[in-house]
Length: 329
Ligand code: TYM
Image (cartoon, rainbow, N blue to C red; front, side):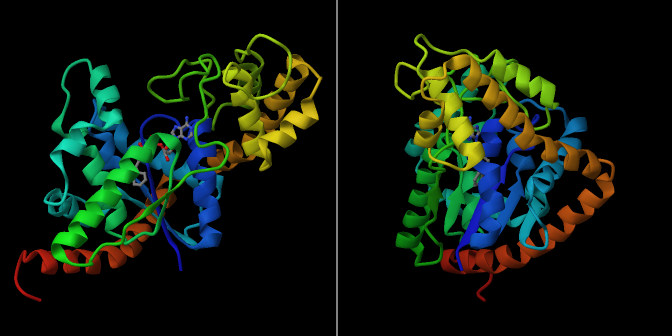
């Protein structure tokens, strides 16, 4: 069976890009294979953060994932720091990681440029921890948004180099990117991706925004010159809205273009506003229920960690054995 692994950061509130680019594909993965999903609290410590709020963010993100349809009976859902195999494997695969490759990571360049004081070594090493997350489970597939392509390529290189040097121990994973929705853009600045840290407040739609707020953000979305509802390089605003509606409906963007052909921007924006608000409303309602019982969310995370550990431990034992680390088995 295909083993699917993905991770999500507990920082901030999750937005529509996270939802359409990743979370809906985690949910679908539960039916396609064995889904293993991880809230990556250790990655969150690589930039400035408030220790007092981290546990709560993990709880919030977990509740959002459950509200979106992850079912702990049908997948493994856990907190990264509960499974120490991730950090041990990070160190072990360091010996198969190229320093030069790490210096070329776009995300490090972007994020380090935005840090006001300390650029941590953890931020530089972030992609190695991410590789360990996936490799510890011998996962075949990694559903992620477009912004993670370079990190997925790096983990593939690490796995290949490891296997060439120490024997066929690790599985080389494949990235899986949504056909539509892998790169949702900011509604106000549609040439930039929607993002928790870099985006505009009005241009970022949060999964838990109330329906009126969502509708308002879409109605004030920046559009382009002209009036045709068609995609094109000179129409980043309309292209983004077409992609969003297509992803929400689960149809091809061409179907959206055909339906709104000749109708003008106003009616189209109103339709996107209404449909996205309606699409996210049940998630928000389930989240409200789940967040009344943080102890239950915590219980689910711990049970998930047990299952995750049972998969990762034998992989780590094989890695240690192959590397000649520790006593002979
Ligand atoms: P994170 O938490 O930043 O984002 C979670 C997922 O959302 C996707 N995403 C987007 N998709 C479409 N449009 C956007 N505007 C958009 N913004 C974000 C991301 O690509 C991601 O899939 N490094 C990862 C977390 C991670 C991970 C892993 C992922 C840690 N370990 C192992 C896969 C496997 C991250 O920062 O995700």
